[in-house]
Length: 116
Image 1 (cartoon, rainbow, N blue to C red):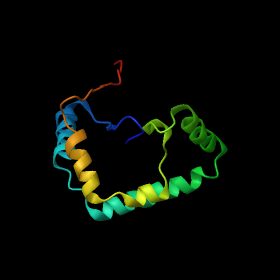
Image 2 (cartoon, one colour; image 1 turned 90 degrees about the vertical axis):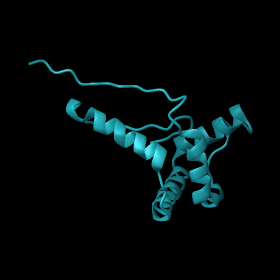
Image 3 (cartoon, rainbow, N blue to C red; image 1 turned 90 degrees about the horizontal axis):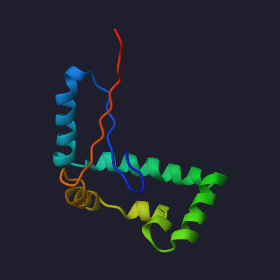
Image 4 (cartoon, rainbow, N blue to C red; image 1 turned 120 degrees about the vertical axis):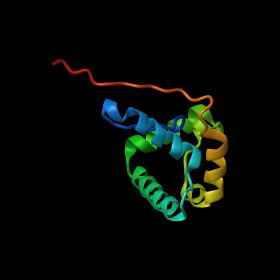
């Protein structure tokens, strides 16, 4: 999952499968291939979400508020159909190769406590 400032994974696993869960996250981060069909599916989802946002008063207000407060800073900009359509597989791969690295990450682990 991702938002404006974060990229994160959420997994629910049994404690006995924790090592495998971390191995899978590492594999995704370090060896992602970004198949074109997956990117196109996500592009379609994002474009649909943008269309829905245009009819949502609170999302429109947030868009204009962010632009007024942050101006041309990245927090003040929002995705457009054109910006989403301009992203290529190489863009995503380059971004992942430079930004989604294990070094500099932060981790948060939570567990459910059960009484017996």
